[in-house]
Image 1 (cartoon, rainbow, N blue to C red):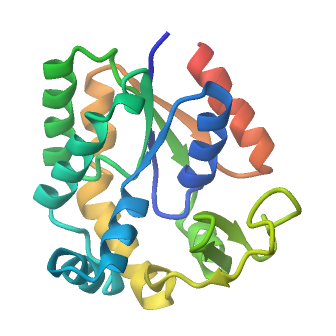
Image 2: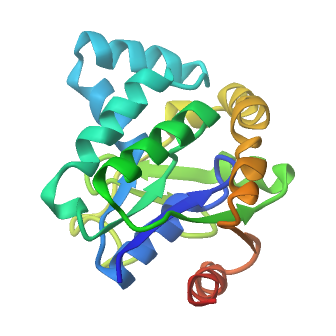
Length: 215
């Protein structure tokens, strides 16, 4: 069975963590637009510098840039048996572009799962979130610290992402409410949206995701 899954939710809802677990469980790649954009900024190119400026201020990267990055990635051979979308689409325009990509390539229908987490909890999570640029994993100082075998062999060098500062977080939540939250209705109308509660242990949330996929 080909799984094409879109994990939907506010920044800090746990999409990246759950996408990693699903990727390992199902044996299909995780497509994280956040990772792709952070890689672009590290390149130091004109595009990368533009992306860096937008991310540091908490703004969304323009649709055209993100859509092209996703289109290139979906065309790769290792993404043909399925994909887990993490952070894309974030706008109606992106969702419509994704529909067009799927129609053109004959992919199986998209399964959309919303991870529901209150904004107060989002703020708590992001204030403690840390990222390792070497192994590209995300951790939390109290909820999910790096453990042996769950990060770099020599020990993760944890960093605070520039888009996790308090000012950037508030702008990201505002952008989510204005531009991304309307996707709930978009996918509800198509009858492909399911919701799981994103509070509690990571393992319990993952079990809920798996049950949602099996239903």
